[in-house]
Length: 168
Image 1 (cartoon, rainbow, N blue to C red):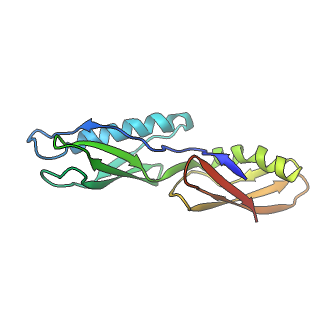
Image 2: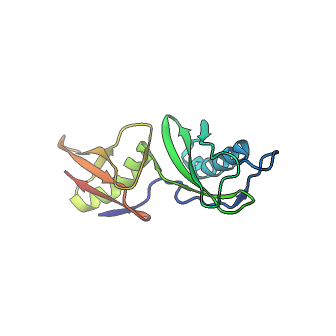
């Protein structure tokens, strides 16, 4: 059974000129602010914000195609972002590697699908907080019916915009 992505920064791409004052290094503050603003915009619908961001330093005069990583902290979850230089003017693109999931939101979105599959109204508990997961990683939830029976549910992050869950 597949569900649309619950919460994801997705592939956030931007072409940014990020020359620092000296003209040969990437402006880390500008890059951090741009990524933070993009993620905050995406996560605001779930009342989440980036609390800090740290980016590797690709050094002076990075060649076109140089890649490095930024890590954004969102309520303790570490969201990895791959950054690549795209021009001699130090323009960059970036893409989030991790998908951010709000556990309470995930549970609320899973309940209708699980109820439909089982034919019984259920509640789903995936815990609290947020998790940053890469494609192929999983998290566990508990599914309970109204008569006290419960079973596990495994949610898997899949390539593309579709995720998968299955009852244990």
